[in-house]
Structures are given as structure tokens and as C-alpha cells.
Length: 227
Length: 233
Image (cartoon, each protein chain N blue to C red):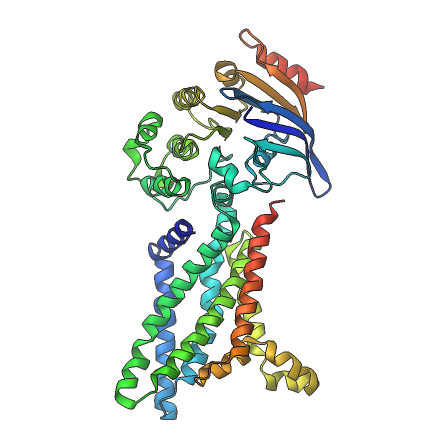
């Protein structure tokens, strides 16, 4: 087991955003994290990476506690935050070198070619299209083959071609490691997820294998979040 | 830490803002130094160090304002804190980058005093003690400004708050304080003010108490920055 989340709750001042969340992730799984806006997907991801601290409950990532071992956790996770914040004034090559140095990764040429950022290495990040920015963020997250890749809406705002490209990369990556990704595109979950977790108002309302059949995920999602 | 330091330094040196500030600070300090020589007719480094102190009251908040505030605004603080960096590495890396830039300002400002030392017999060790005092002040001001920058996502606000705090801490000399509070109280407060602690350094005296004062304040603000980064609530 790569990740274990047990009874995790989180609140911001008086507002409780997560209520006693529990789930596990095994190696090789691609978890589709679904929920309406404000359901708690981003907060859960931030708790797993250690960017936020849990109030109650415990998270273990390969036996590490993100609250007390954030640095070690970030060595074995790759994280693409929502809106993919990058340093716009840096060139792609500079940024990727910076991340590689921090993660102590020496060779990432194959990754650059696989994700398709080779042609924009000399470009300034702020001049890139949203799709290319997303690819740069993905390369940075995947660098060093982390045990768990956490992607917060990786295909949001991309055209269908870019979306397919990113999905391909995620699928290739999951052959060795695990992926948790959040999305509002339900067909994406049908295409690549091996399991789905649906969050609603800070609670898990579904955790299991994705239902089979075209439109089945959408049907299930709508049924669960309507209540 | 090395990577944060280099990234920050790269930002300062690839950005005209950093250059402009450093060059402007050096020009102002040197111009005032020359003015003092002509108006007083005496080559003394004391007015120069005091001028540099006031330049730092504005220069350091200007250099530090973007350090964390911009990262917060752009969301890259999340990227930073989910990379394998310790909080101490982030804080120290950013501090060292700011201090390097201030060090560059000091180096540039050295040209005039050193030239005068050759023609007028200015006592160089005294000059270096003065610079030591300025470096200690820079450490304290930088950590305070970094802390303020971490508390907001607005750079301008960070600059305004830091420079106001530093200005208020600096404007109160013993004489000003004595004019509106009892002398006993002002004598207690004065040793806590940075300008009063720089005084001996400007005269070429290495004051261990003042050194302890500056290092303590730097350590306290550094600790506050690290704790704030660890907070993550």
C-alpha cells in the first residue's frame, strides 16, 4: 500500500471542509477524485502532500507522515497543484533544471520527450500556452518517478488534443506507480481511472471500482451528489 | 538551500528592479558622503554609515517585499512547499540572497571610502567595523521584512508595513524619546533601538552588546519566518 488516509478531518477557522476521510491507495492504481467545487478535493490533496496540516486523523505515505516529514514526503510524491503555479520569468529549461536539482534527478530527457516539452525548452514559461504550461508542470511533478503522483485538475482548460496527450502520459506513468487525479471531466475518469472516489460536502460518498459502461460514472456521480 | 539561494539571486540579477535599487542606493550613499565632506570639510565615515542606515530602511523592505508575497500571490509557495525543501532552507536561502544583494551595494559603496583612505589617511579598520555594523543591521532588517512579506500576498503592502516599522524603530532617538516620556523610561528603551546600537560601530568600536542585540533580533525574526512556513493551516 502506498497511501493510507485514516479518519482525516480538516477545518478552516470554524468551517469544517473534510469529515473523517478514510481511504487507501495501492501501487499501480489510478484514482479519479470526483466532487463538486468545494467538495474538499484540493484540500485532501494538499493534506497528502503536507502543504496543509491535518487536524485529526492520520496520513501515511509509504510510512511517512506528511505533517512531520513533509520534505521526505515531497521526495516520493509528485504534485501538480490546481492552476499549475509556475515561475513565469524562468525559461522552461531553467525551471526543469531547478526542480531536477532539488529532487536530485540527473536524467530526465526521456520524460521531456514523452511529455512533449522538448521544443519549448528555451521559451520563457510566461509565454507558453496553457497546454504547454500544464506539460511543464507535469514534467516537474513526474521527475524522479515519484511513488505517488497527485494531479489537481490536470486537464482543466485544455483542448481535447492536449487532454488526450496528458491522459496518455498519466497512463504510461501509472504502469509503475500510483496516481490520484481530480477532474470535472467525467469521461476522463471513465477512460483512465481504475478506481473512483467521490467526495461530497467533505465526505466520501463512493469509493470503489468505476462502474462499467458509457456514461455510467456520470450517472453514479449525479445520483450521489444530488442528495 | 543552495537552489533557493541561486533561484532568488537569479531573479534579482535578471530583473532590472534589483539593479536599479542597488545602483540607486549606492549613488545616494556616495553623493551624500561627498556632500558631507564638502560641507563639513572633514573626512569621517560616521555620516556615511548613518546615511547607509537610512538607505537600508527603504532598500531592504523593497528587496524583500516580493520574497514571499509574490510567491503567495502567484501560488508558487505551494509549489515551493511541495518540493523537497525544508522550511529552514527556504528561509535561509531567501535571506542569503537578499544579503548578497545588500553586500553588493556595500561593495559598490566601498569605492569612495577606500579612495579617500589612500589620499587622506582614513583609518581602514574603522571603516570595516562600520560595515560590520551595517551588515548586522541588514540581517535584522531583512529577517523582519521577510516575515512581513510572508504574512501578506500584496508586495506593496509588505513594503509599506516593513518600511514603516523600520522607520518608527529608527526615528526614535534618545533625545526624541526623552522629550515626551520620562528620562528613566527612555533610557530603558533606547538600547532596544537599532540606530542606537549602530552608534558605536560607526565610531569604529566593535560593541559586543550591540552585536548580540542585532544577532538576537535576526534570530528571533528568522525563527518567526520558519515557524510561519511550518504553520501550514
